[in-house]
Amino acid sequence: MNLMQEFTKGIIKENPLFRLMLGTCPALAITTSVENGLGMGAAFTGVLLASNIVISLMRSIIPASVRIPAYVVIIASFVTMTDQLMHAFTPGVYKSLGIFIPLIVVNCIILGRAEAFASRNSVVPSIVDALGMGLGFTIALVMVCTFREVLGSGTFLGIQLLPEGIPAILMILPPGGFITLGCLLGFLNKMQKKYAL
Amino acid sequence: MKLMNSTNDLLLVTSSPHVHSRDSVPDAMRDVLIALVPALVCGLYFFRLPALMVIVSCLASAYGAEYLCLKLQNKPVPVREQSALVTGLLLSFCLPPSLPLWMAALGSAFAIVIVKHLFGGLGHNIFNPALIGRAFLLASFPVAMTRWTSPIDGVTTATPLGIMKEAAGQQLPEISQLFIGNVSGSIGETSALAVLAGGLYLLYRRHIDWRIPGSFLGTVFLLTALIGVVTGKGMLFPVFHLFAGGLFLGAFFMATDWVTSPVTKVGRLIFGAGCGAFVVLIRLKGGYPEGVAYSILLMNVVTPLIDRYTKARVFGGAK
View 1 (tube, each protein chain N blue to C red):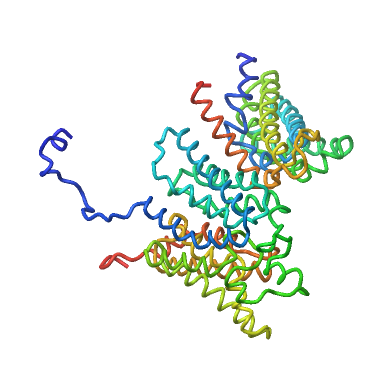
View 2 (view 1 turned 60 degrees about the vertical axis):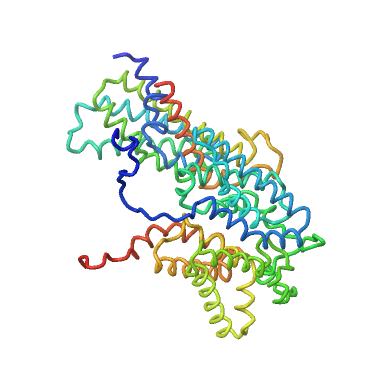
């Protein structure tokens, strides 16, 4: 098994957001600023990494018939830890992400990786898979965030780029999320066809 | 195929329909542009140079965006391309005259690119592009989009509906002034008279069905009359609501959009009544003083449903 391939597939070929169309709920809801995107990406990657490791280690002792509840319990424990850690160390991001941190429990990418990858592979490939998927999702989130923050608030990571009154507030409202994600998906699909990625 | 395009054109066999009308989309669009002229003249007379600049930016941006979109899709650009101009002109009619020009151009481009072409181009959009353009601008630039100026002298002032809703103490304009359009408001909406003239022309040319504006205006009038009588505001209340804001413009030019309104007769009555009910609800109970744009957009959403449930039964077919 080629580890490099396992790592890069999460970024382009099987990008969770742009290719598998998973995790669209946080991608629409919290992508109003790049800071949010990075915070969500980090929390997501942390949970995915930890749950992939544990599920991969326990894959031979979890009975197949109760595997989904077992995965959810494992994921939920790590989400709770992440939630508490973020509450303590990054209160600003914690506050602006709000309910979407606990909701990582039901993030279908994490459950999807557990079911499709970690439960069938050993620890090292599972780690690489988690890192690749986490990075892919974070990059995707930051792309959406960049468009929305620059066009909607006129800032990038809080740095003022456009003067007051120029940014279109709609872009940081819910319709802006749908418009940005839709346009990005269309553009990336076109690029994929053109360069056969 | 070889048989069909041989020299024997007389024996050409095609499927129905065989009877053709001379009507075409460019002709209909030209008639809409003609129908908008009275409102255009009134808007220019009342709001002068700023209005002209807003209208020109909207038209130029709409045409440019349309041209660009068609070119990018390798589609031919029709010589008599007028549908984009109709969208641009209608959008400029529902913008305040003091709006910065780049905002007007941005809204116009948004209407053409996002609302029209990303949904498949002319005839495929599910929302009225001009109205989404306005909704986009209102959500994006709430301050600039609600700065109204009085006619002729251009002093910042509230619209009649704004006075009604937020500044109860101020003097409301006379009904006659409201009818002519000598009040503050969007460029092309203030004069109910001019919009009515254009609307009647479209009705005469049979481009629009009386059912939509009829049930739309009728519902607003009936509901506000009922409220006027019950609350003791008198019969001036429904008349005021009929002529204030963009109700006439919406009823004759936006709600009747061929693409986004129902095709069945009963469906059109339901559509207009729904628009009217939403207008009254938003104006009297909602957060905004005016709700014509949102009411029509809300009904655009249910247009396919209305069409499905009002489909005519095939004569002699099963129940």
